Amino acid sequence: MALTREQLAQRVAKELQDGFYVNLGIGIPTLVANYIPHGIQVMLQSENGLLGMGEFPTEDNIDADLINAGKQTVTAVAGASFFSSAESFAMIRGGHVDLTVLGAFEVDVNGSIASWMIPGKLIKGMGGAMDLVAGADNIIVTMMHADKYGNSKLLSTCELPLTGYGCIKRVMTDLAFIEIKDGAFHLLERAPGVTVDEIVAKTAGKLVVPDHVPEMTF
Amino acid sequence: MAGFNKVVHSYEEALAGLKDDMTIMVGGFGLCGIPEGLINHMVTMDVKGLTAISNNAGVDNFGLGLLLKQHQISTMIASYVGENATFEQQMLSGELNVILTPQGTLAEKIRAGGAGIPAFFTATGYGTPIADGKETREIKGRHYVLEESLTADFALIRAWKADTMGNLVFRKTAANFNPMMATAGKITVVEAEEIVAPGELDPDHIHTPGIYVDRVIKASFEKRIEQRTVKAAK
Image (tube, rainbow over all chains, first blue to last red; front, top):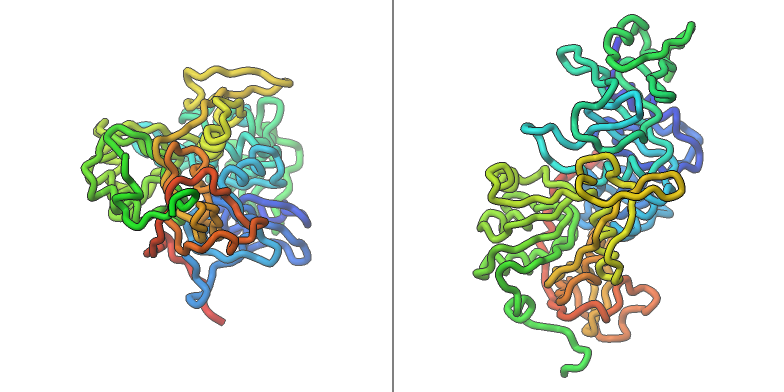
């Protein structure tokens, strides 16, 4: 079975390490915060100027001056800090964030990513995504492996306008955990019950499959 | 008292000198930290052809969306414009010229503008459409794009506390683009929730020194919330 959005987030959360500063994008990446493993501490960075994002507020302590990058009202944890957008992107561009998780429309075998524009259909802007993919070394892209017609989103070359060129090394889809290196996708793990054949069929770019592909655990 | 007293008492004074075809910077992220009263007053002024630099474009009936509706903005420089249907219409019809800019690059363009730096190299956007036509350079094995800095005729800022000399303190994530924009306006106008006497703000805690600020006006804010998210009370 393909992973649900929650399972996808849960598997990504296993990549968190104690003491990590982490930026979570909008959508599935945001859900990762719900599955931080017990016994480890991470600080969530929100690019609108918050390090140490906490959970959603209650009606009693809601504050219009305290939001996340998705414009949702949030809280700040003990030890949090507030700062300007320039300072925030100094952290991001300067490589100070330990792990970045964000979504995408397409990725390709060279590690390029497209996530901000579909010509003729959707132009909302890139927000902070271009800075995040350019600045971070450790990025996990979360996405659906294929669209609803079965067309692969893991391509030889991205077809949509790029967000970043040659910057993505790991992709977590609803079917598989994949590493990108040496101009190819490398299959690391498969979702429980998903066959290697299905993953091969839904991966358009070159895919390297080892003899044994373990099932994901959560 | 003149000298360093920058307090004005009306929006007419606050925005005196704003004319057609000028460039304005407007602080805020989404609707958080926007100078609401200054925007609302611009809607009543007969000023058009503006170039607006702001991370977002407000929503249809609040923030910069109000200026868009009145067709007062001709060029918009922003990183994300997803929440505004008026904006999308005007962009698709060609009425509005839109320069989408990565958020970190936008912040740094403004910071650099205020700091007297004309341009800088960044890896952000290399190999993407936003690098088209821009100079690139390889430095220590990595590719960078040359991005030019931004300044404005007017910077419109929202602060939490100001003193009469224009020293500013921002609050929580309402700071966002405001501190850099305050440095990059020829005329920087600040709308503050509270104005205090000099000496009342601890000099160690001032985010923006008064040298950058020209006018300060006291205001109260609606502080509209875009995505009201709460958890259940225990």
